Length: 157
Image (cartoon, rainbow, N blue to C red; front, side):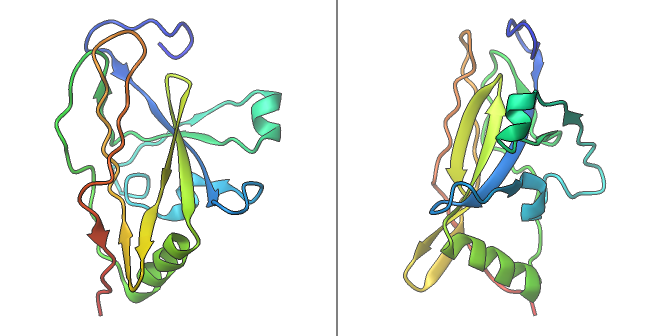
């Protein structure tokens, strides 16, 4: 479990979302949920908050579980769509600004931090990086986040 860091095969692991912010200003951070991504904002998302220590609070940590991401210890998980969302003009514009400002986010799995960029700005095209997590089968979880399959930001009018 999260306290002992000992797991049984196929035991459910909790992926904790934490914070996000612009890469060039690490002191400016926001709660991950403020990104507005669909895995925490769906009708069936039952996210739980985890308490933080005084040190974690001073560093701005806010741990919220990501219940749609199902990770089991010792089990490989094929690439799976967690959720999808249609972007209206406002949401697309907001995400476009976050991608251009090189926003990153931080997750935790078994107290191990995972950092990744929200998207990639390549000239005239902005794209969201789909998060793909693949836990390994030994001891502490192994996580690989890939940047394959960029999703171009498209506005729905």
